[in-house]
Length: 430
Ligand SMILES: Cc1cc2nc3c(=O)[nH]c(=O)nc-3n(C[C@H](O)[C@H](O)[C@H](O)COP(=O)(O)OP(=O)(O)OC[C@H]3O[C@@H](n4cnc5c(N)ncnc54)[C@H](O)[C@@H]3O)c2cc1C
Image 1 (cartoon, rainbow, N blue to C red):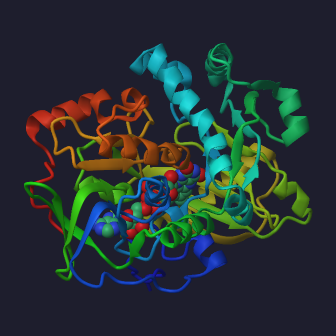
Image 2: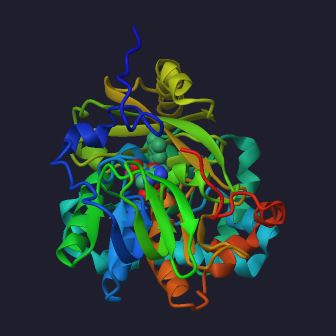
Image 3: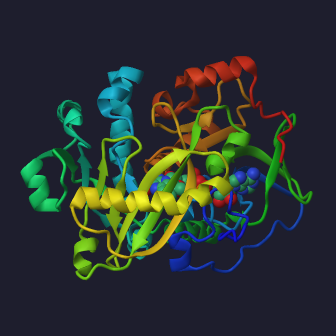
């Protein structure tokens, strides 16, 4: 028998990711009461949409958030929620792709994400198990050592504090059996579901309207606004629209990303719960990579074994096999068996060629429409900047991060423009 109940969330993740089990469904949010009018409509109430709504609260604009599920139950509920400034693309590689100046800009922006987040949400982060942790980036094998040495030098050259661990120190401090690692003091973990719900609740208290079970099927261009066609017929007229619909945004957006599946698990609490609570984030130079963190209650959370996306059914069918791979990878890394697995799940996510997000307007498209495609392993760190970039777009200002997080940088996007792919006025199939 098929083990997973088909749920409305099934397309992006398993029906029972860890955070949902831990924090529960919560009360259902209000449904769209009928046709509405607003200044800004945000499509998607995941962590990205929530942070954008928060950034717009201060503008006095009438902001409305629509989600086809309940808030935060898309990919955000499946995330292992490692917050890193380090990109899936090394600084050195990014400099090759975008030039040194833009690569530096992108890395420094991600470094800044931590302060921005901590200054904006000090209490909510504490309630959401936010914890600063070191990040330990392992050389997967001897062949990776030179690239990591170059990477350390490049990061130090732009003022990022990193340390180097050789094989013996790495084994002594963290128990990892790898040739060396880059250690960054700047990284963190949190409970993404609790945090996102908290951000949205605060937004609602400040007048933002959040509606659940409101699936946007099509975006129509009007003379002086955009019209969101919502399943069920209660349409929303908006001065500006921000699509922050996770990887499901790709129905509306230019073709800038590939979709993969990733697999994750949590163990039972370790005998020494403090060991897991103090674990750094650990990940590696292999692609796809293994990633792990501890939880506050003493579990190890492990993810990786990514495969290209085919469909949700295949993803779930692969779960047992990929979980065995994760357990084997843990054993290979630490030379000890993975503690008993409490729960495992899978989710889909999108990656871009340079590992950076696409946020803001699309050149040549309707300027009332913006996207916040916070893809890649740093989705949450990128999302911290999305609100500010979107706000600049609404106010008709250039944003300093446009050269690195904007659509203008991508050859793929430019090809999409010429071919007219996914124009906002086109009917989008549901
Ligand atoms: C297993 C796994 C592990 C991950 N680990 C990490 C990690 O450690 N660190 C990290 O930064 N990122 C990680 N990610 C990626 C992570 O999920 C994203 O960074 C982040 O949660 C995405 O948030 P989002 O708000 O952009 O998207 P989502 O959380 O998917 O939110 C989008 C919302 O839009 C809604 N929506 C979609 N289409 C429509 C529509 N047509 N109409 C109305 N609403 C719509 C959805 O219901 C959803 O709630 C991981 C992903 C997975 C699957």
